[in-house]
Length: 448
Image (cartoon, rainbow, N blue to C red; front, side, top):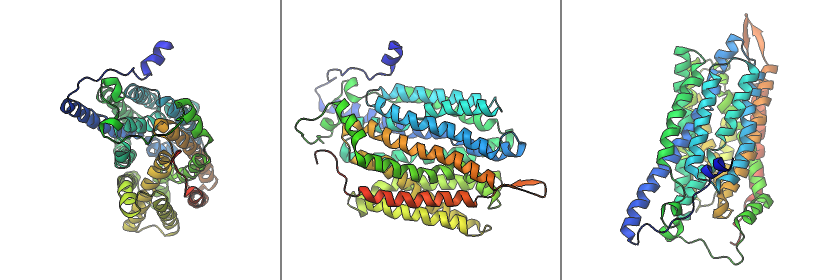
């Protein structure tokens, strides 16, 4: 066990590899680009290994292998272990070798997906998907820790925005590509295809990511970018600073607000394709295309969020969080209340919803918490927010499944699913998220 822990522990600092600034700059910039691309694309691949469950729901329901409620429990198994894992692994990532930590987790997620394709037992699927949730939980907080290790405070807003788009890239790719695999080869390829893709990506990530700059004989990023951390008397130790995160009421409030927003996010992620097939007259491939468009819109929102807050709101996250929270509510109401049959209007509303969710995931899902915490406990802050967020996502999945099952009826020998109660559940939680976010408007970083 000690050898296992030592494998994942960050390496000791090394002496500077050179006193020549040009040599330092050349090596540093090469590694920064490698880390940034690996974290961004690699985290996107984590989503390939978990969004795929939404794609196989309709074919498996039609075969009678599982019910919507059972699918809800399978989805909640992942989200429940994911919530716990995000909190635990967030604190661990402040001390970890991120390259080894993330790549190993993605490889184990690939193995869980491949095993899912060989089973149709409800209990085995739930256990495997729950294990996958733990492996998946290693993606988010370590990514942000790695960004904080290689990019200074002045650079983090832009880099974080681009990185946070990676979940939309991975989700969009898997929604359509996995739908095509399932259409052509059957539902089991909905797990085998993503499993193979994640396994290959994990091996690439292991070789292209890096531990902290100091472990490679490079200066800390604050010194390299001449962006020093403000001096503070009696600065706490790492353990004290992590405990400080746990004691901050603003972090808990942001986490609960994010949790409520994640009900909507994962409601659409998990059940959106089924909704478009059941309520808006789409087939599997066209529903996959619509879902992919939604994820593309989340990418746009995530990429644009930093620019929007910096350019139009003077780096304030609160006002855009309020604006896009209201847009999120409005788009949900439109998708629910407007009649089916107008594809361009569906895509317009999906675009607004996806863009708003992309902004909110970046802000509520991490950046607002990172802004009000010390740099050295980025992982702890992300773990807290992520853990609370996925508690909401887990409760959503089983609740949505039960609400959808409760509204099912048999029409002309075919099972039809009603989404009315489910949509009101999503709309109510999105309104509560907006209201709760308003209560941390003036929160600041310790010492500022």
